[in-house]
Image (tube, rainbow, N blue to C red):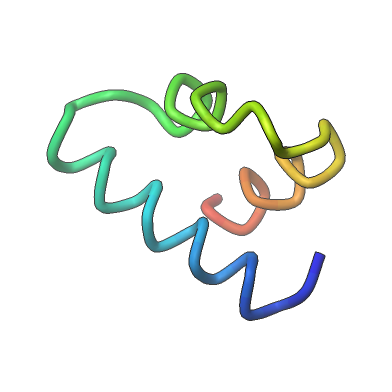
Length: 47
């Protein structure tokens, strides 16, 4: 995954985590177009 694309997803998921009081794992399931390896890369970047 390109760095800029990953950064967008990381920032979007972090914002949703604080607004919606959900975990990153729950939120990332909403992004059906991402393949599993991309989801894992984003989750590891979130920490």
